[in-house]
Length: 265
Image 1 (cartoon, rainbow, N blue to C red):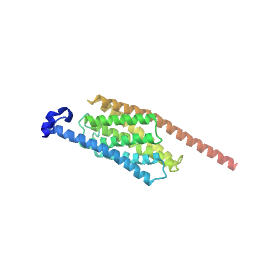
Image 2 (spheres, rainbow, N blue to C red):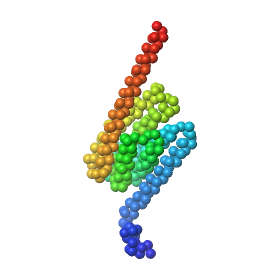
Image 3 (spheres, helix red, strand yellow):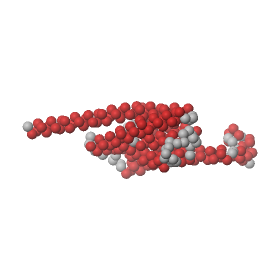
Image 4 (cartoon, one colour):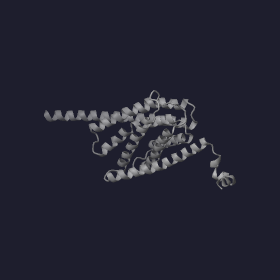
């Protein structure tokens, strides 16, 4: 009966399971697994946000979302490190078929980006550059999952982009906890800037070059280059932020010294 139905309605039901090769069956099973992982992942991130919201009922929407974002960053970096097959060349093999572990990592991060894009529009963090970053990342990861290729480069990209994220969110969490303009907050700013510069502007261009120069699909190349351009744009904003913070702190120290001298004169 199943084979009869597929012979009558091939355009509706697609290829019959009986006519698929073992390789095609394995690919279809992987596609179904990835779809389930993304759906379960989105539900899990939403659930994590609800739990954090219950734990910190007096904190803002943005505070709770940043806690979830920090959890994702730690998880993504850890999974990316565990997926490395050869530490002599962590980004190898280039332009190869993605392994099941790499596909799982991409699916987990894709589910988080879908969740976070929605949260950014519900909360107070709605801005154009953040939205563009999310859309570029979602399209890029989606393309990688669709082609089932370029897994090494994409997992390396996740490692690079999420390495500085915990310190990015720590900066804002400290401000809401009452540590704005303190040495602790300045230390978090400097750590974030240093790690961001190393990851996005030193390692990032190498991964982008490897992705663009290899035999990868055009869409993946375009998304890799776009993400590097977004990183360069943010790098200049980070430099400007650190310059402003250091100048502000130096000015305040000079003002305090002047006030102290006037008091004792």
